[in-house]
Amino acid sequence: MSPTTMKAAVLNRFGWPEVVQIMQRPVPVLKANQVLIQNQAASVNSGDARIRSKNVLKGYKFLMSLVFGFNRPRIETLGTVFAGRVTQVDASVTKFKPGDLVFGSTELKMATHAEFVAISEDAAITHLPDGLSPTEAASLVFGGTTALFFIEKSNLKTGERILINAAAGSVGIAAVQIASQMGAHVTAIASSINHDFLKKNGAASCIDYTATNLTKLDETFDVILDCPGKMPYAQHRHLLNKGGRFALVTGPLVEGIMAPLKSAFGMHKIIGGTSFATCASLEKIVHLTQSGAIKPIIEAIFSLDQIKDAYTQIDQGHKRGNYIIDFGMQNR
Ligand SMILES: NC(=O)c1ccc[n+]([C@@H]2O[C@H](COP(=O)([O-])OP(=O)(O)OC[C@H]3O[C@@H](n4cnc5c(N)ncnc54)[C@H](OP(=O)(O)O)[C@@H]3O)[C@@H](O)[C@H]2O)c1
Image (cartoon, rainbow, N blue to C red; front, side, top):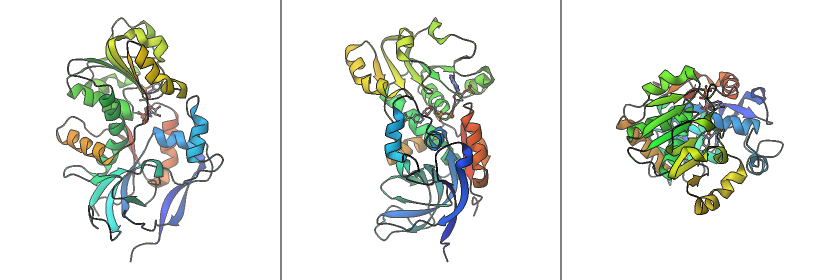
């Protein structure tokens, strides 16, 4: 008999990590075209923390409230990344069957910080390849698909020079790995404690942002990937070569809106936007993993009961790589 209730991390208001409570909730009821997955691993990441706390850059708070709720969360369980075993499928499902190991992202539908999650077979879900554990797969989705999105949009080429800010985080470390495997020269920005880690993952050189005025660097780049939104284009544009691309992974809303206009009339292309995982991007991640271009970077593993601890650490702003929730179901 399949269980009818499950453990979930539930949010009944926005705020500090303490607003997250572990509670019993009904197992999702399958809708047309959906598969039900018993979660083995999920990730807790900066995106979950931003939604939980509504700590967003200028201009985004109202938009975020429209999507996620003003006072009370519209969806009470956060989390986008999942990896686990299919336990049920709707009769119309053709790509998956009970027993399959899968991973992916529910994106705006969230709800993966729970023992079971339902998702349409046409959404961002794919089979777990041989050689990758659910924990490893869960670690690749958030940072990997985001890094890929911005690297592809910035049209990075072999031999070009890329500057990656917040290079040790989930997005940054995936970008370091992908860019260096493409044959780009990677300069990584992080505090010095992360420099050996970054060099092991492909950075050619590192800069400590706590000891360096980034506006005064004496080298230039073809691409700048500003993950934390700490390098405003106006103050750092001189670091870009002619024809250079500036990716605002995080940036104020107005910068994102102005990006096409500034790109049309300036000497650089400014790239904004939000990355959403798709089935195609997951498959690219699988391919990059199998070719050795990216490796899972798992810094810490928590149980679902420990999710507040994961959030508390993320909120400190110095997460390295990825934090995973292990549901204690692997090898079953
Ligand atoms: N546009 C999109 O679609 C999209 C998608 C995903 C994420 N994001 C955004 O991308 C950003 C990075 O996400 P993430 O998941 O990689 O974060 P993360 O894993 O939490 O990493 C945070 C990293 O930021 C570094 N950091 C902290 N303060 C810094 C500063 N002042 N200057 C430079 N680096 C600093 C830390 O390195 P040290 O320990 O060395 O300080 C840490 O490694 C977040 O703002 C997130 O909201 C955007």
